[in-house]
Length: 325
Image 1 (tube, rainbow, N blue to C red):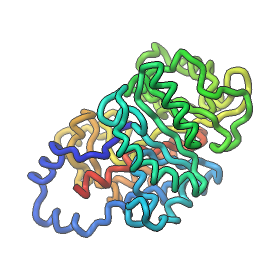
Image 2 (image 1 turned 30 degrees about the vertical axis):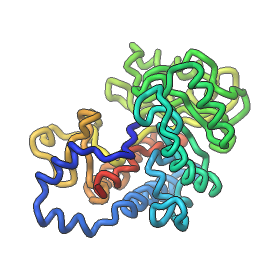
Image 3 (image 1 turned 90 degrees about the vertical axis):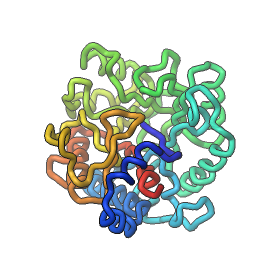
Image 4 (image 1 turned 180 degrees about the vertical axis):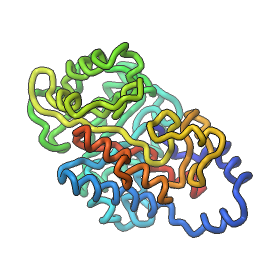
């Protein structure tokens, strides 16, 4: 749920200070954009091999849709063929500060890539961070005029369900992402005293797509039965339920975290993200990290598939920017 379209200077300084000459030499041979594309493509192949209609949705890092990362570059068809949608944060609001309009130059830059992905058949899901009613209305109306789905998040923590009805609410079935008119992005269930309260709050909504975490705040994962109960909107109609998964950072509160890493980091783990304590940059192209994410029998992706989710929302796709800087 983090956007990193700008360099994180503090973290980069730490990496430079800690890296050996050998590390710098080996890192220089890595095509960071292509390695992230490959990771997403491989996740897609694994997931769709289990369920062909499982949705793959990368968030941010939209430059990966072209081969050279430029808005007028040739499309990277293998990457586009592997995904079903794109998530983008801070498109109209929140890039510099929440509830403040994103600079028009940034919006124009992002839109050039988003439109090319959209024209290739992908659904576009925008999360704008704004709490003023007039700005939320502008976000919904403007994104809709571009053919994008959008969610105006009042808190960057993504911890509340808006009191108002979803934008363009309807009771029709959502058989694919293309049928959706709206979505809810709710990752943090800390405001709910119990698992049952959280699930009931979600069941009571009429959103076409729910993007939630695989885990409740006690660290236990939602079951296939619980996820299945969320797949019907309040008032009728089927919807899609999608699980969040970060693939560009390791999080110290996840099931895979080993206590020994608090003292000695594995070779694939880099500096802490100064904006999100407990999140660590990773060399996402290395096999040990990929084993955790999708290759092992106990992988994060396998847990999501076993819980019956309809897709996965892949975060920190723009990790390539951290290493390129």
